[in-house]
Length: 220
Image (cartoon, rainbow, N blue to C red):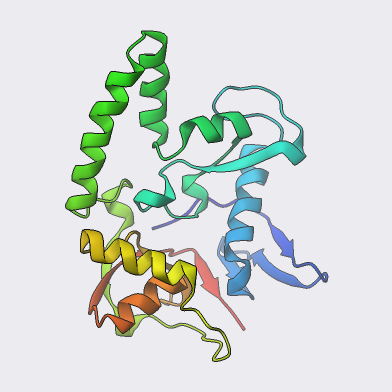
């Protein structure tokens, strides 16, 4: 898929090193995979604003703005610009694990005094989603890829089997599938969801859901 990008963008890490930029062909070049999520957040702010909530429309101080996943992470929503909206803390908290579309319907139901009925029906639907591995994201974003086709840089000193790994493991054991797709660049280099990839490898899962970003490239 092609993600939303501005014409120009440069990102520096905490010590002033350039770790991401957009080249003349509109490709986002990443020198540090560790910065991927930060870069996505920063681009979302730059393209969609830093001072106005995209839900309630109120002006907010930039240090009190948050980033919302339009399709929630708990249901497969990736941290990519197409899925991010700047919003105030109140709207982000109220929206929770709803998609943007579900949240708008919830607000309408709330105005009509039937929010409890809407949430009850929505919970039944989300149970169906969990059971049948239907991510709450556009189907065209996702493909399935052989795990051996994905390249990843591993720090051998990193103990990745911590709390996050247990969460991935518990989810798989309860529902029988991975919670969300992993994200790779145009050359299949892993950008996000390292723990999910490692669990799939240890579990000997041959094919996994993938979101491939055709206009993002990891460079050395």
